[in-house]
Image (cartoon, rainbow, N blue to C red; front, top):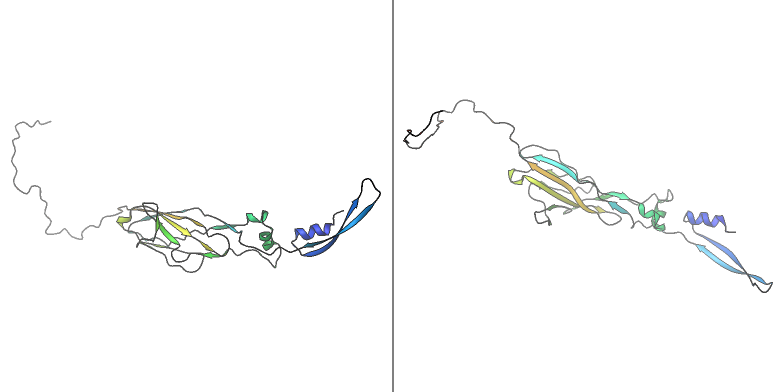
Length: 212
């Protein structure tokens, strides 16, 4: 019978040594014997490298020229631990209070936020978008477009993580528009206001005109 203690130890990733005896019997002779087998169950060391990341949804943002907007936050990638089903060492990082899991901390570093240009290349941010890394996972941008920036713009991000492959994804889609919402009226009628209909006197024959 298989020792259930051994099964429990295997499930809990605990180290232990066991002595097993395997009985061998000859079918044509009434002779049997036991072979001693020493079994060592060793603890799997925690390995956080299989930690995976899921790209967040792209943040959609509309900004009007000449208006004040709040500083948008760059969306952060989401960690997932699906590798626990296939990696014993990774699972061992979460089994006990002494191994409370792998760090899911990360940050956006200098140059980690880029602008996707019209050719599809990811380049440095234009002057109207400002990014100053804070060293924290929560990171904001300053956006100050003018009429030359009207259109749709995509920003991509690399999230630098402690464990796992650093995710790279489309972080923000910024639509810049321009809407005239008012006109400024003069306080008084300007004294030099001139309406020019013709620069010079014009004459024409009206005989062929038909009045209706």
